[in-house]
Length: 88
Image (cartoon, rainbow, N blue to C red; front, side):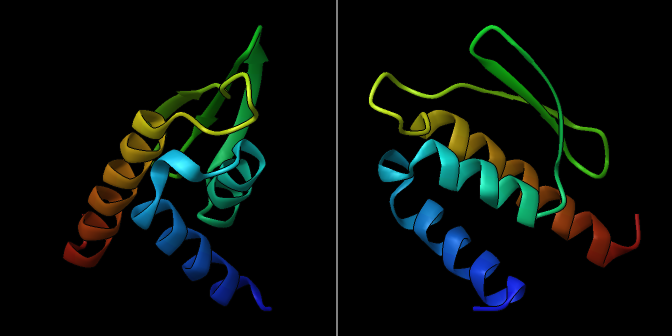
């Protein structure tokens, strides 16, 4: 599967089931969407969007992404995509 299809598939999975996304899938999605891993402090993984919006994520004890953090990412990603289309 090429990068664009993989990105689309992962975005759909995150939107449809944010509570069931594995942490490794979430980090892969961040990377596919152009986010940059900055550093890790304890269990917190710090990522930045292309517009330098900071997102701190951490996994649950069972290795899944936290649903509220997935939703935060989706909201930021949507806002950045909209601003890119408006030319800001």
